[in-house]
Image 1 (cartoon, rainbow, N blue to C red):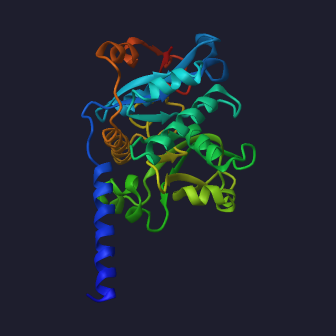
Image 2: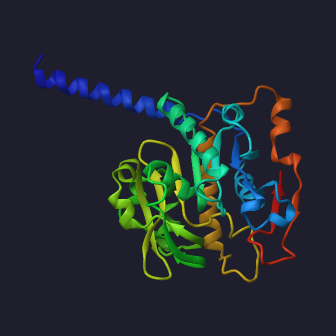
Image 3: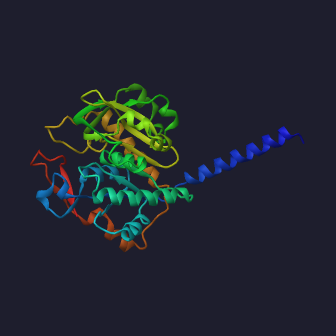
Length: 322
């Protein structure tokens, strides 16, 4: 047998091995996914009047996941690493929500612990997805870059609507954007996204960071109110980690008439596919609670949402106080 033939056969077998490994990762492990949402301190948010020493979760993030067939567990940020690890082993995915926490907050510290666990799971042959939104997008950037006070830049993007400027070729290479029906993207090349943030990672700083460019690929960029280009959507190259600076949870569930949140059918449909994608990713994880009782006691259903919509100075219509 010729050496070239042997090489060809070896290459073919390696390809098959890779394809089988990838297929194993894409196997559904649960039809009852539970996704954890990280909580935040009311002290460092708009909601201090609901309890200075309380934790909260904005209800639209919960509805965002529930609308695509997931249940939600709140993740407290005032617990130790042991308790975070135990809860991590029970949930099928993680959502890091937007907010106004500082870089030195318990939100960042808890995020770091959970992200390191997610890397361990994926490196070990498992599958654990993470979705970062707004502050969560920034935390993923800070965590990977390792330069906590330099990669995030101040910018003006409060209550702004921008088209989703997709990077060239991202539809072919991205699992998240690739999951969105092509007709929706082709017929609406400038889909509106809602931004409410004072900071982000500029494209210039992203490209200057070897850690960031090695870990993430940029799916979209946008321009802030003063002309600065920033990374608005990104996806990890090796891990099921996805993040966006904009808010896919608001269009269908937040109704403040003083905000520019788009409520058109196309935007809501597009945001729904982001939710559906994350929930389907969580179905590929095999974590579970140790008992049905433990699971029931952990669910967000144990808390009642508080209506804040009477005061439109707040960002959210409803919040959960933990």
